Length: 255
Image (cartoon, rainbow, N blue to C red; front, side, top):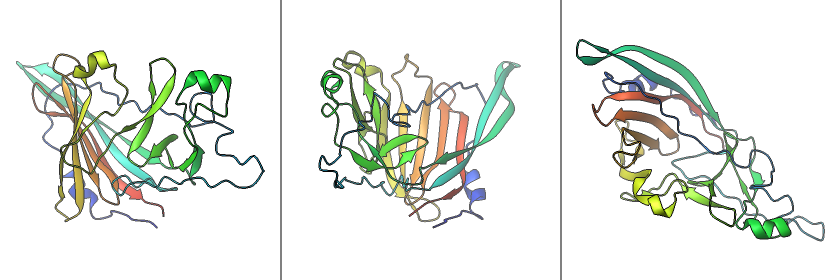
């Protein structure tokens, strides 16, 4: 089912804040796990039926605010602002634009991840999570509103970390963090669940670090029900100006 936004892209673009100062080099790294069956996350024998018959494998369906159904795609325009120090102030001197597309695998795919590396190395039948069927978003398995991330503590293991929640006020641990440095971040907070100018339900999130530790920028995300991510802005904590933007321009959500 194709759901276009022709006629609405102008409204989306109009929400870009005034862009004035500073340059941003910020990369949000998505750890791609399970693009292929490898030694880290996929167990080629898990979920099988020793008798040779078909095993019942759970299907993990996407959440409505991140509807990564098989065959879906989203196209975005990205804006990277360049600034220079001119006459005592940072002045916007250029905007680099590019187009990117996020894609979902054509089908749900089987996936399991290591929960105990020591056991998994000795016995490939154990030490893994149960195999389930999940969509792969840009080559990465998605468990509703969670991603798989490496937990760098012995024994080697992986865990599910949420990147989105429908509960206002939730603070999400979106990636592994050494408990000794939890106070540094990153922190992701569900700020609001409301409706936009088109009366569509949206969720707004804020991602930030502790001041003094990469705390120079704040990321703002808006997810729309039955659409997905519609905008991502990065602002400078020193000037409050937008230095990066990613805005949805077209999409298709599969069934």
